[in-house]
Image (cartoon, rainbow, N blue to C red; front, side, top):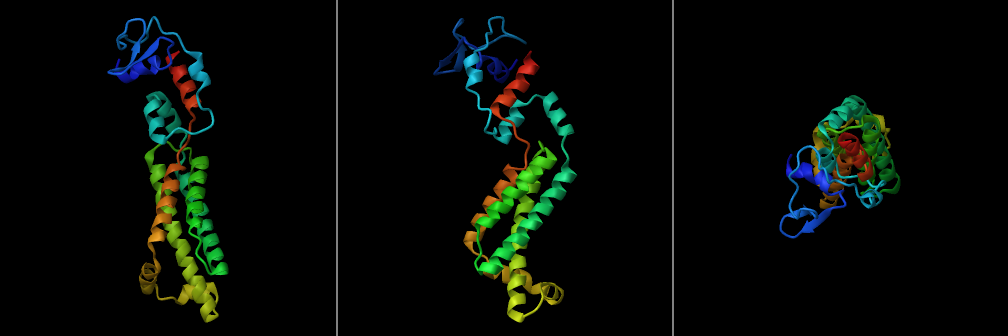
Length: 225
């Protein structure tokens, strides 16, 4: 067994003892663990379980490291990427339209709307996709950035329509799309980049299926039992 596999037992054993040089050692032998499959002296420390967080989600990278191959395969079988993609895109589109509507009505761009868009996309993809693979987070981040850009584009269309006394669909039909990117680049500010980055981060972070520390322990305990 590897040191990491040993520590899965040692961290929960009443005989664990910290050592400044090597980390956790056994209080019975004053050495690091060297057993195979199971330790004959292992006794579960119930206080460790009681202190486990059963509310806050564990970071996604920690989940991948702590889940067994069997559990990973089981949860991956429950993933639904197409549904997550569709729902995330719809939520992002709705957020972009809402952001543009508020911007046009107030004549002020509220950057925090980008953060709300990223979070909305992420949470919706998590709920419907139940994703474990990194593709879910990457997709959430990409959708968040695209929808933030779309929100700015819709705002530009709205301002142009109000200035010319035209309908939004009329502007969309007759606008010179070769000028869209230069106009958006000219209006872009460093603060926009800041909000876009947060939106992308939230779209990535919240798109994954979550587990608490206690849930991971229960899964691991079933494997060890």
